Image: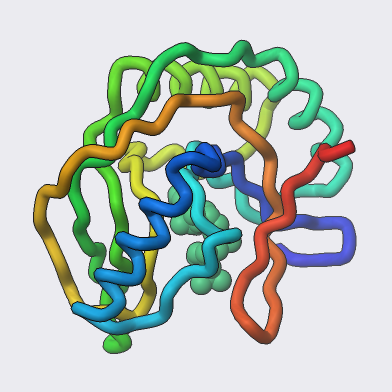
Length: 174
Ligand code: ATP
Ligand code: MG
């Protein structure tokens, strides 16, 4: 249900700044190979929980809860590229990802438990960590030299539809 007092929310990690150039280069290489629509650098992220249409009144509750999560010292390793079929004839979502590390699994477990304690609705289908790089592209599947992603505190985002595609606004920034 969309409405003026609803926002399309998700919780994610933005790439550490030092990883962004490698992800953009990878995106561009894949785009040259399998086409599709390249995601803008500002849109690259790792989704940890998808809440979808949520009453805007919940935003302060979510921000307060995220502020209680401690910074993890753990890392996640991106070691492959792959694609998801979307069901649309337009093609695949192409992503960079890798198995969840113990630290990432713990972070997502803590986050999901906190959301449940706060009575937040979210999509609890199994977590498949990936960073979307292309949409409506051809398929790809291979390993790659690893990129190490130091985990940080998850951030709350609103997904805002625009004529140029979705824009993700980080909420709670001063
Ligand atoms: P669009 O759907 O407009 O093409 P998008 O998928 O980038 O663009 P959203 O659907 O708002 O934008 O999704 C925001 C983030 O949440 C993306 O990382 C998306 O992959 C993820 N996401 C969307 N729906 C789900 C879901 N049901 N479960 C898990 N993650 C989801
Ligand atoms: Mg979507």
